Figure 1 (cartoon, one colour):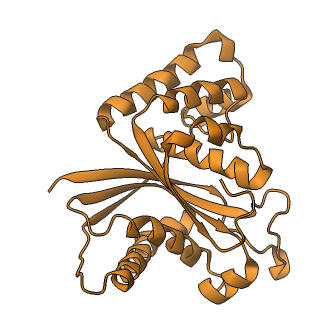
Figure 2 (figure 1 turned 45 degrees about the vertical axis):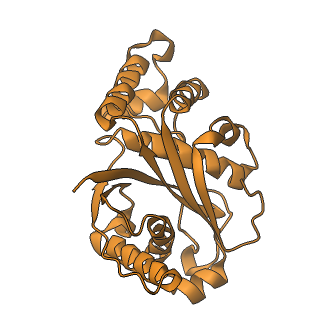
Length: 244
């Protein structure tokens, strides 16, 4: 069976409560939205992966970026990779220019973090919240003639196999509701990785981050620059304020 690979990452966080079950959504370091997105490539994956690695090496070798703390820290701890939150503006521009040239498409689910919805719909369970977003992404690809290989950036317990399976089961139920006469049995492989071991997750990270800037900061320039890569955006909950 042919395989179809997607690369998934998130932006924001699924945190709603602090100490004493106090709602902290929107406070310092806690996002107002949680975003899950996945990117697919029409070019050869090995070739794109090699180009990302080559660009990483160029950053490390460039005297212009010598001594940059965010780069040096990663290099000393585990190795450098592109990460939009940490990267300096010059590196971001370099990698956004690279993404702009790729033949890829991106799909994202953006969930407004509303505590009462989190309580009633997800039982205050951040894993269930993640699985719900995942189900909306997967539903778009059921049924499929291909084996779906989902390369997913690790996120604590949310990306444990049982929770990812829960998201798949939700997707199947959602599809069956929309097409009750169609029987589906999707062939899906979950491959949980980190940004360092799978360079293509770097691209998913940047695309998610560009959306996050719209919803958290009202800053659209990054999103506008690569808007042609966005094939689908699904908004869950809320009133769509600052909708991209």
